[in-house]
Image 1 (spheres, rainbow, N blue to C red):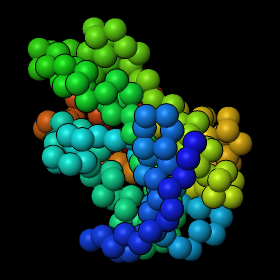
Image 2 (cartoon, rainbow, N blue to C red; image 1 turned 30 degrees about the vertical axis):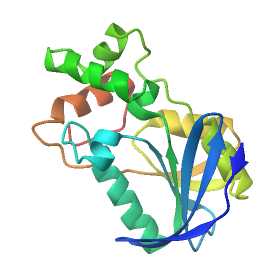
Image 3 (tube, rainbow, N blue to C red; image 1 turned 120 degrees about the vertical axis):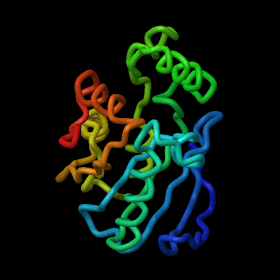
Image 4 (spheres, rainbow, N blue to C red; image 1 turned 135 degrees about the vertical axis):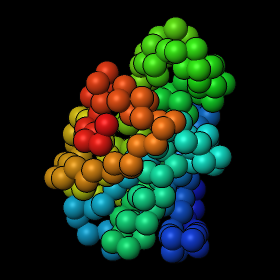
Length: 190
């Protein structure tokens, strides 16, 4: 892994410090906002071009990202933006999965139809980034228990899970139900 220099990044949420971590052909983004007192408020966010950039209503990703930035800007903390689009299958395959969902498959079935696991994301790099920052105890903003398990496996103590649940809409309610029922996400509103 290679770490870029750190720079200031003013945003609509406030000013952060930013650096990039190069891991092979992927470049992950890290935003920091002081104070970074442990346990540090942390969001590990996997890239979602359609939700984060285009404002897609098919998922809750963009709203989760905005909520996390808002909280971190006010409380201090870290956002690790991992470049593992479409639960790790890439944008091209994610759009093919969307097409299958349009035909009636759920998000897990669509990934399986394309020959992928339901979720191919891994969080080892996030653990390495946190260790590089000297952070060992976090309050993790997530609904995904897999992130908690992976961080613990990399020696990061998750002292609290901070729910980051967004109100479902007509376009993502079934997607969120599938995440809860088939992927074990900790969701109450679906």
